[in-house]
Image (cartoon, rainbow, N blue to C red):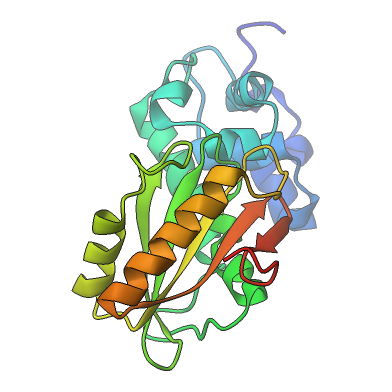
Length: 228
């Protein structure tokens, strides 16, 4: 594509902003949505080219959502400011899956857990271990990120987990982590860690209600499977 091509070279009817106004946001392609978030390209290059460069590098919107600010800012036309804009846009979308401010979600089932955190874990390339802190009525107090990386006892330690729970005055906790592969089958380490945390919680007086594994659009409850 000619490097001198800019957004103004497109007919007005084909420009993302005009298409959104005429057809609605759902009609826009991923490239057009990214172009609108970015706002403008670099000198002599359309923002559409910059948006396509992001898609080519990371594959799709899910891949971009999982990319770090540093990874995105390495691309031509994407500095730290624009990379931060993109991360902020995805985070706003993630937060739509959570409760409204001041409206505490009630979490009782694996379905509740998946609905609450799936957006937050979508597209992550590493395993993220979260703890949902609940009060005596199973209302969500907070979601704490405990660790990032493959689960083992050196990364997820009961001390760190329950320090957060005690600080939040939680009556119970539910653990969640993602499998980037999409396979929700628990590993031996997943099961061992869950049992260890449940035992620690019993001693402290904070119930471990479940451990849910998220994989893409699927999820698995270790409690429901009878694994602890």
